[in-house]
Image 1 (cartoon, each protein chain N blue to C red):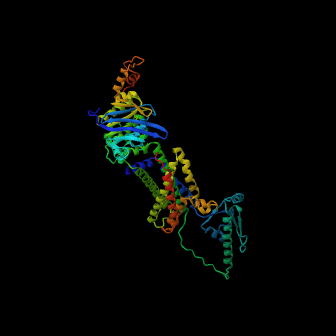
Image 2 (tube, each protein chain N blue to C red):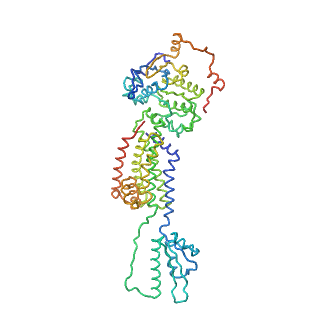
Image 3 (cartoon, chains in turn green, blue):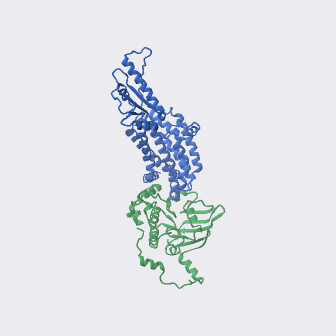
Length: 256
Length: 355
């Protein structure tokens, strides 16, 4: 986590209604520069809605959202230049090659792009001439993250990037996300996998029915629970089934 | 914007069905119709066995360019052919029995081919009369016909078929192409991903439209070039007529893309695109003078033809290509097309959806 806790995203009393349905009910939180911030919660809790309001893709009903000091209402275009966005489902022309897609997005951001460097970062150099639709699930997610980095953003938003991936691909993506964070980019991520949040996020907000019900570092949240007298019903073994699976099948990329 | 144009164009070119529909199909139609109509007017005349082919009457018939003889068939075969309308007439010339007596010219026609058979019988009558007059060395005393022919351009089937096919190609490219692309960009969240970048929405539309326009004009150039050089399609003022045709193509495509935007707005997903798009394209395909002249339709149907934009596009293209019509000559066509473009884009603004 960054040392001085400099705020880059500030959400104050955010409310989003879809007609009668209240998707987000008065949420407030801050994201600090250089951290991986997780929005956790079950499906339908309001994670994606909150994320899309921060990405300027959705209008809020009320409240204030500042991205790097810019308002999501007034400075949409300035914000879009500062952020990178990965959507839950793919958002690419299926029949274009990765190189063509990178050119397309470079054009959209009006920046030049070093194809080699950006594909190397997500280990897809040998797929440069493949079409997007020919990639595996993990490769698509990695490419998706690559496109969020084209404009060298200050903040990237990842919406459930590891959903549907096998254990190797997930670990792989975690390494990639840490690498992005270590290069100075703030990462906001949504997930409903707690193991993922525990190893990846510096701080997490737990969202339930449109409200934040807890916000702290994963460690602090766990300690807090234990301090309140919580005990697991079953003694914890030194390894779990996923460890067994990974030791049997290896850690290397599996989605090539 | 340039980036979207490029990506759009690349993705069109990588879609084999788009290329097939807008270039290959029209060409196939042109080839087929070109050959069907290629022979022009002809009369199929059966020749009885034992006919005296050296007789002056026979030679006179043989010199007619539109007569096609069918020899070597038996009398019964010839009769059947005649009844089925496969032969327009059957003739037989028995050699004169003795010098000085006239040869018998037998002519059989049938109701199955009344027009051509009737025409042939008229011609034959004239030939026989003339032969008799010549033989008797009688000079005309009542009237002498002085016929002259003005040199004209030959209006071939291709001159009718090609503009229709070009118009149809633009229609399907504009309506189906645009509708499919926007519905699928919406569904695959490509549009949403674009919105997360600083690009303006209008640029996305314009970029896509330019890519489609580029592709449409490339296919128009290919169709016109092949039509002109391989099938003798008339471009009356050469390259300038070609450019005028491209201008009309661009106008037509603009209107058809408007239809495409409307269809994409009304369609929930890709499976609802074809029925909606066909609602726009099928009537135009059948009734707008693509294959048959509008005048051939029954009168109650003609008003329908006369409101469709493709009718006017086809009409304008035919006039420009064959008659070398200028802007003022196709003013009505252009005015109707202009009205259509206003109507279509008003609808498009109302129905188009981004998400």
